Image 1 (cartoon, helix red, strand yellow):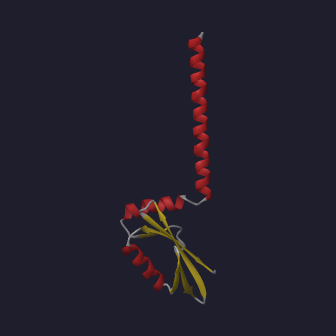
Image 2 (cartoon, one colour):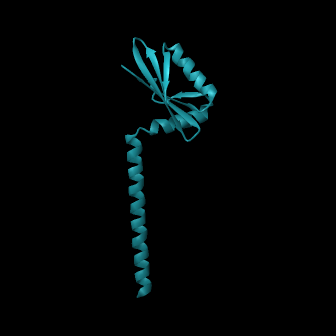
Image 3 (cartoon, rainbow, N blue to C red):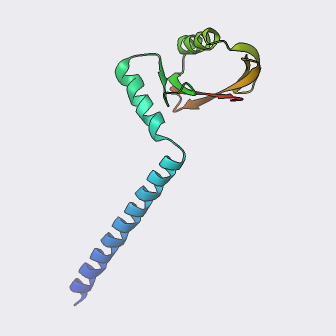
Length: 124
């Protein structure tokens, strides 16, 4: 009798553990969708596969992913200057630029101590 009870308890505990795991995975995927992490993860994969120094994350020029090194940062800043951004000053992890009679803020975030995510916020 005790062997069958142990088996039933083991099966119930495995079912509960599986349910908890599924709920956790669902919550993780839900948060990833809310935070817009999928394009960043795809850009990381593209960056590794293409051997390029910089990838446009969203395709609209507002987020760029690059390796965290000085050459990639130089390429990014050169691209900003070519597009008409004029450097003004630095605030912590962000930089202020003048852009077409308005202002733009470029925010830098380090990801996994290997990548640099640059987000451009302008007065559009």
